[in-house]
Image (cartoon, rainbow, N blue to C red):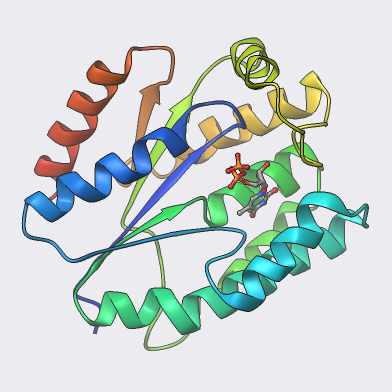
Length: 210
Ligand code: TYD
């Protein structure tokens, strides 16, 4: 049985989620939780190798979705489920909602295919399904996100190089997911300052049993 919790962080590129991961881990540790912090695509040796291809090589959108879910299966089996079974809190920087948002919304893949892959890879029909318990969605308008990425001045990966319409579709697909699963999602205004966002996160986590 899973006694831990899976907390996932989502948002379009440039929404600012990654700057909160370490802080959330510290907050939970201070509450006495054992925390495992990980990311997708990645989180295992094989997953990190697949990540390199996914972020840099052109490929068919269905290949992209299949590789995302292949990396995820490995991640769930090797890292996430064992940690949840040990009673730990797992913080995952992106998870399956990202596939629905990027491959479903952004790349316009057939949503039913993604739902099928999710059922399989999450083990929904098994005795040990793996589902996120809580999801923080960092939401910012696409223009703000693009400006932040441009200001950072680093090399852009394959997804960051997509146009504004792509990122707008990703953003709206995320918001649609949040509306569909209101119990586990918390939408955060990524334009607020760091302290306000952190206050909101900590209050919500306490409410959710942290
Ligand atoms: P991310 O870890 O946010 O990159 P960085 O830390 O460099 O900002 O995510 C890498 C990219 O992968 C991001 O653009 C979204 C994309 N992605 C998908 O398209 N589908 C998925 O299922 C996942 C997990 C990520």
